[in-house]
Image 1 (tube, helix red, strand yellow):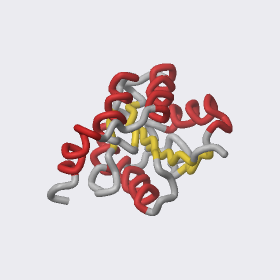
Image 2 (cartoon, rainbow, N blue to C red):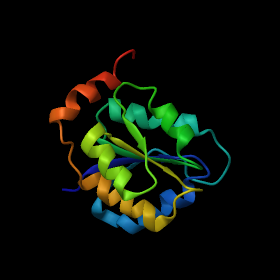
Image 3 (cartoon, helix red, strand yellow):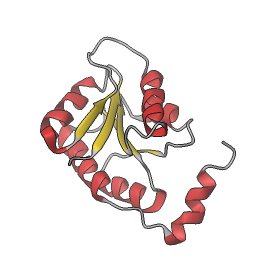
Image 4 (cartoon, rainbow, N blue to C red):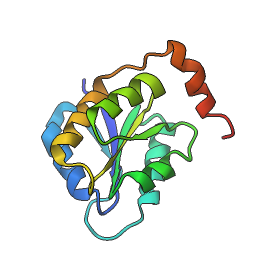
Length: 145
């Protein structure tokens, strides 16, 4: 059975979201949280929507996309269950999983092309958290929330 991956974007991220879902086809079961057009909307709404899906256990990993990836990741990271990492290459995606146990990959549609985004997703989805020496550091990410 394929893994359920939540995906959400604003209007700037919609074309990239569409391309990513097409490229992966049925490899993942997509929980598409919107938006579904290039009509102007607020990235924060979709960052919070992603966080709700992670908090509710509807998906264990997610992908969020806005123009730069910054705004939507800030919104998602306001929630304790989310560790969203903005990645612009596969090395960042690998280290976000290995060292930070990131569960949401943030992409910038105006910054990152489709091929690089696919590399980031492939790496993010197939890299395990190393735990061990990173556990205490990851636990401190939740302090103050």
